[in-house]
Image (tube, rainbow, N blue to C red; front, side, top):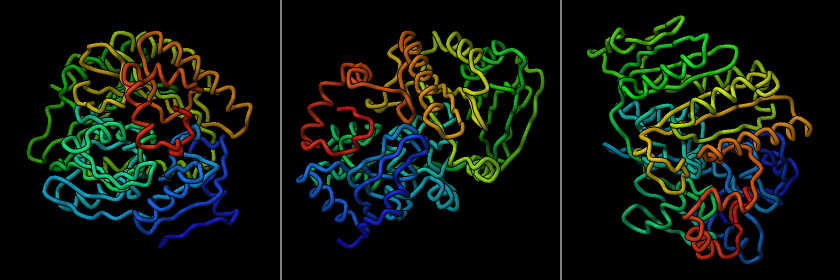
Length: 432
């Protein structure tokens, strides 16, 4: 083995928590691989001995999804951008999207789907979805051309929509259950030059949601999200070339905000601004060490307004916490193509992603209270046709997972048996 295998207490404790900061699992060892062969070797050993194994990037999940008391593989040691072509990039799973965004932008290119925060690894977002504020781009999983994957037997497989499609579709948004992503080939597109921003303030949540729908259905903006709390506002952005700015009056026609703020920015500073904001939160609030029992749900169009209004009006200051956020996104359903990303089963053109990003002081009592709240809010959303986006914190049984995957569940059970017969991969979510 060429990489490092660390067993000292400090190294193991350093990777014993995720972004939630209320669950702890100390692994028995930490692998910092120097090659894919190191990952294959450790997975084979773990499979033979029945030891759980999980891969870790930034660990931005919040409920222990990537934690293990077995062997943890720190993927950030494999972080090379191997190639940037005219319309694609080949990237190690431990590299992050900020790396690629900066490198691609130097060539006039960009990934088509960029999450708000870009300091997330490829392996992590592709194992979960990678949902951006852009309304027509699909998720980061939808921009993948090819994957290199180590299965639970230690086998290295290359898969795509044309070759080994079953594994490809299971691994993308598969919550780490069928293989460890080690390398990805992803699409790139020409980067816009400029971004026009519109911040629209509202006193009434119903007017905000009405204008949200109006902007969404017109599809004249590139990004759109709503923010709720002390401030209620819509943020909309239009990507454009310098010589072809949008007509602001046309974009904002018939909307009813109480206040409108326009901004102008270059594309790269726009898409990296949340990374800068997170650094400020780290300095101001010790952000990384706050407990974050988040809730993130997909909602169908027919019930989104009723559900969001009901929940937002019920939230207390404790529910939002210290520097927490409550946000609403939307996506064109046809652009979200990966079957393991479970969406509401209606036939509407748009689906909505609603998130309560609670941030509070660590402590078992607070975490338990928020987990119980999340379960109540999930059950309410489920009754209205909603589903989970499982980066977050909802207590889930195997029966819940079976319900979550619906008619795909028997297929995934069989695939788990063939790709991970020892059942060692990513035990945190307790799916199988």
